[in-house]
Length: 201
Image 1: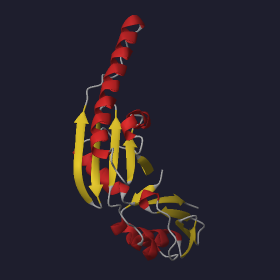
Image 2 (image 1 turned 135 degrees about the vertical axis):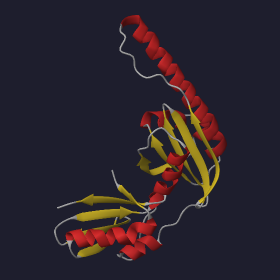
Image 3 (image 1 turned 180 degrees about the vertical axis):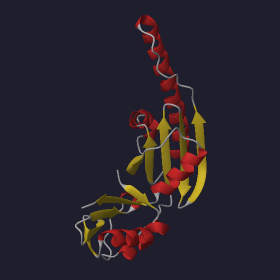
Image 4 (image 1 turned 30 degrees about the vertical axis):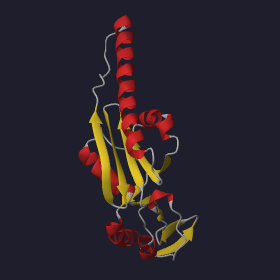
């Protein structure tokens, strides 16, 4: 999993990397900034929204290249709820969060366990249908990308709705708890962050 570094903290992150690992040389490869430190540690930093970087091989150059789309969205889905928002740059427009009760697992066996599993599946399906309805309204006409997170199976279920066929999903994948307003706000910030993969020597 990449480390998500907000642009405002990028310079400090690079300073800390160099302080820990020694003088670092930089290169631009495959649309990303690569750093190689004296001790053999490396990192690869990518722009948000799957953008390709082709600027100078400097940390400042990468930060300056970050742009936020004029029309994009965030979609978070888990069995216990969903959250989504449509954004214009960094300004949040329409959003929706919702919680659904989906029963936990039971230790009972036999027929009661099968009934319980069916009820659980039905509750989850209803939750995904509700999420898809809101997503179609808020994100269905998007021109830009969508960053997703939560439970992969749940997100895939929602995106299978024909009304969301045109949605373009970009990294990073956001591992989030049951979506609430605060979780959605953090996901929006994470979606605009640099994605950094570090290999320590």
